[in-house]
Every structure is written in C-alpha cells, then in structure tokens.
Image (cartoon, one colour):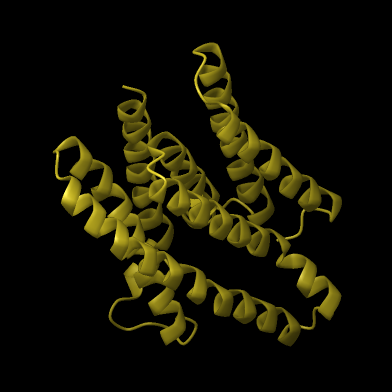
Length: 226
C-alpha cells in the first residue's frame, strides 16, 4: 500500500516535471526547431534530448508498475541508468559553457565560479540521490527507491520551473530559483511530517531535507548567486 502511494506521488511529480520542462524549454529550444540560433549548440541539443528522454522514462515507469508489467519496468529502469548518466555527463559542459560566457562578458573568475554554485551543487545532489535510488532498487527496498527518485525530481525541478517563470513570467533568475527552493522545501516538509504522523519511514526524506537545507544555506551565504 505504501509503495503504491509513493509510486503515485512520483508519477504525479514526474508528469508535472515533464510539463514544466516543455514549457520552460519552449521559448529557447522548441520554438527554434529546426533552425536553432548559434547559442543552441550541438551540445545543448544533446543535453536537452537526454533530459527529456529521462523525464519521459520517469513518467512511463510508474505506469508499468500499475499495469503489472514488472519485466518492462526493469528493462526501462536499466535503460534509464544510461540516460541519467548521459544527463549528468552533458550537464557538465553546460556548466562550463555558462562559466565561459561569464568570463567573456568580463565577470571575474571567482565571481563566475560562485555564480555556478547552485547549478553545480544541485547536479552533485542529483547524482548522489540517483545512485542511492539505484542501490535501493538493487536491494529491493522499493520504498526507499521511490522516495529517492522523488528527491531526484525535486532537484531537477528548476530546470523546468525556473525557466518557465523566467521566459513566460519575466521573473528574474534569483527570484525563480528562490521560488523553486521554497517549493521543494514545502514538498519535503509536508512529506516528512505526513510520514512521521503515519509512522512510516520518514528518515530518507528527512535526510534529504537536511542535505538540501545545507546546500541552500551555502547559496544564501554566498549572496544567492545565479
């Protein structure tokens, strides 16, 4: 029963995440197809492709569980390992691209490095949370696996939500990132409280909230760079 609730929560979160990705990437990416501006390099296109591929897999996988297709779920899960590795691998050049652009714009190197803190920290936490989710799945700890996958979705949320707020609402980067942080904090808090009240395994999400809070504290201490 708990596993079903967690998988449903993950499916809802993954579906919203995919919708936000489409909205967030519509102006700078989808609206440019097939004639991309020079800013949308081949590396950017590849990164977008693997990110959307992983988001689609994330939506489909919980459905396979509800449909009883466990074998298909495992095959898609194996495929998602390689897709997520590609997401992380292609994210690093994006960080380097942004860093180089800041330097060419005249931003001092220490400031340019600081400005990449939030993106780099979130990417590191995504890698750690996803690895932990994979290890939990291999231990057949389904509840921990679903919780950790939800954490991965929350960590990737700014990729869609922050862009949507920026392109469609004209919200500044620092405000949109702060809004994403608040949303994530609220979701984690609600889930931890709910699980504690129901005497369920709240420690996984509680640990995630603590680690996420440390990352946010570092961002605030640095002056909320973006």
